[in-house]
Length: 412
Ligand SMILES: *Cc1c(COP(=O)(O)O)cnc(C)c1O
Image (cartoon, rainbow, N blue to C red):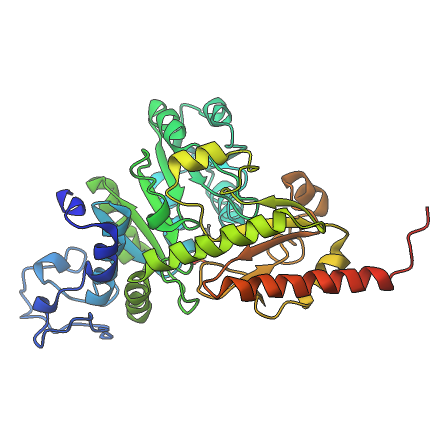
């Protein structure tokens, strides 16, 4: 798609996919089309249900085509630099569609062992246990482990980088080569960095998945997902699943919100990153913090890889506090600028305790093996004034100190 080079990223983010000339009155902002069905020219109209092509102005039924959704899909494709974009009802819907499009019973998937918990659960309880698709979870921080897990029946290698909540990275360029040498496709969940900071297609991936719920929409007021890819046949298969077999496309109002939110993606990402970097440095120097996980820190074990494959380090970080889960609770409960909540990628700062919230269903021993200790705190740093965020963290540390002074000294 030569078009992708025509405009720089920030220009595409503002207006790509929205075309005033396509509206009777010249709407600069694409209207929200809420209709579920479209008046057709006659009973013998040329196009049939499954084949109606919105590019040809063929609109038949809202599940199949919707102009607001297609505007969002064009925007998402342009931002990731792919020929085809598809918008879904959630990131989970996008990811499951990618799996349905690429594997059938008897096939094999190699996946990062540190995937988004919902994706891991989908692979285990739906694809492996019910649909007979074998899945190997490997520590992909070492690309050699991916190579070792490849089998003749491996059809898909599925990665995330950085991962949640420990911000581990994998080398997409190397893993793309490994996947392609085995005739498998590489799919990458790029939710954590957004296309502004990382472009997996350029690094060799075949398909990029997003939860647009996070940075792409960016305002914590919509659930959505996306796939972006170049291959025409695979895209046709994904469209067929989305529109006909699964019916899991993004709703028009969410498409509007995603179009609106994505306009400011570059500015938001720069501010998320500036704030997160400052907070990471502050935390690294704090006596009540044991470790900070942020790819922008020189202490991150894969900082060099981060510099190579990412255009920035993003707005998510995690750190371990001194003490136990009660100390962590005292810290979290004292925060007020940070909101205690799961999710990430919105303009407001959020904080959560994986061991007690997102990763609580994983047995403690397994959690600890993954590196998710009881005092690991994950934050999605927002775009507020960073001094207010730092002052909030000071309140958290002060509450921890007060809490530990109230505790009777440990007997030993
Ligand atoms: C949130 C998230 C998902 C799931 O997206 P939903 O929109 O909640 O369905 C998948 N991958 C990553 C990395 C996420 O953060």
